[in-house]
Picture 1 (cartoon, rainbow, N blue to C red):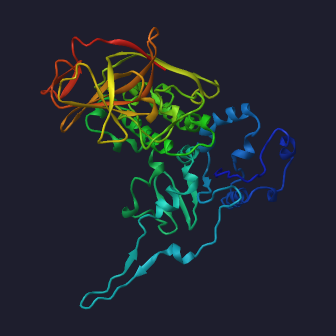
Picture 2: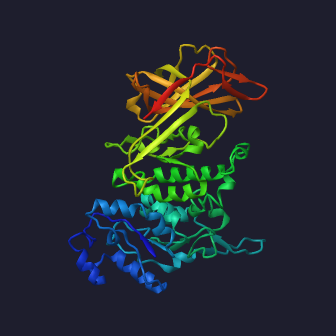
Picture 3: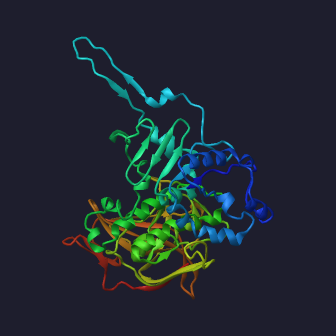
Length: 457
């Protein structure tokens, strides 16, 4: 079995170089924090002899051991009989169990009496039960826990008021031991339903699924990225490491090349992620700017697509920091591609605080162009270039999407990403470097469009 927990700020027994020999000989369970003691009790009651706890199984003052073990998280959690989640607590000293009123677990049942009507029994339902018990609990705000929950075949949550459990088939708790009622189910439940091989097909979009048999799995990966980027990391450099176990899982299924949180098979559309609710840049390098892993903040990934792309990927590479975990920390990463690159002028927009208008010199068509910046303070006082990447049909026209870039070296043609570019085309234009066909409802690069070689770093 395995344990997911929050360390907190209090000191407790950890594995280090200095006490390794002593701990191997054995130690008293009483020396452990309460959460660990409770987890041992649960494991014993479930008939399991072994319990994996990160702070006791990884040498905490050894960077080498941490990097090695971090690359094995997929094997550790995926092979766990059940993951014990200390979901409610804020530190390892809080324990798994809490004092509670057991009558509250049963829920409230009422039998109102109305004149002239037959008496009926009703059960009062808390629609926010799973949200407060599991989804919004302190443990599940940790980014590391996203892959721990998904990789483990079963998760037993010790919540503040009751137990909850989840697997690939059911979300349940003491109030609803046979599974949550339909009224309780929604976007915040079935977290373990983010299984690319079994659940992704329900997320296929019409038309796109025919272009790639694995497109549903890419949709699932995007759902994982949304959940993961909403989480918190104590150590910023863990950004790619803490999701590398899930990336290995997905890579086995897709047989695709993993590139700093993106996939080569859908790379053009994967580049089109957007920041949601603000972000901050990492102080130390951990990913290229074209990857969402380069920043801290929740993102909305681009819609998986293997057609309707207007760029040509020539080469994409990432250089791992540790060969034992090639999907983890990076030294560097870059993409060389060919596409249409337009210089633009940015102007503030009065209608929205999270985006800026962008204008092109050839822009005399009835269109709206704007940029969603990755960081609010990095789009001004520098030249902006818009790389047209993809198109998508909409009810009121065609949505053109691309990357907002800053040039870092004009000789080497290197650029860094600073935001997402979008344009809503409601009519054709001879001046814009794409042509629009009202019969096919698609736009493509025009014959006179000038393709430039660009290196994204």
